[in-house]
Image 1 (cartoon, one colour):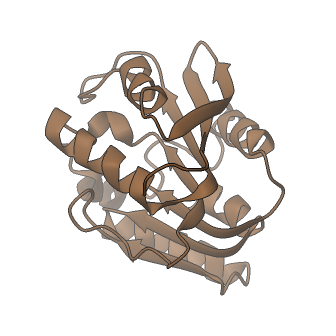
Image 2 (cartoon, helix red, strand yellow):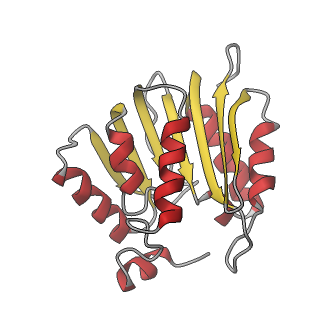
Image 3 (cartoon, one colour):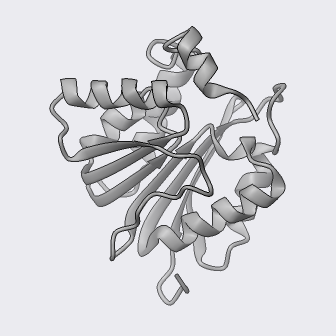
Length: 194
């Protein structure tokens, strides 16, 4: 797997998430597509340096952001602190094995951007199961992934999103296909098993 920690140590913003038009546009579309204005408990998996996290913190009463790279997580934590978002926590965890704590009622929002295609088949299945079981009934799950091929991708974006489409508990509410990325949002259905 890609050594993201080494990338963040070499360059604090290796994908130019703060300024690149692709990143700013993708982030704005994802945030605008979220079906609810406010969420009770949000979980962002793969928060990176925190630019989406900052926006999500304004929409969630409580937010937990997770990244596997300690340097990226520290940047995200600092960014949130500078903007006074004390209700947002940032954790360094290796997914899917080191899963964050899930509130008793579950998360009513899970956000994933540019992460799921890095997992091998077994870890991806485990990760998908954990996302579904962590999501509250009626909760929204947003995933946004780059679509063109690149060297360290382990899964195809369309295939990853199709796996979520196939989950009985999930119903797609939003879909946006762009030449550079795919954005889908699903809602966990009433009567779905945790």
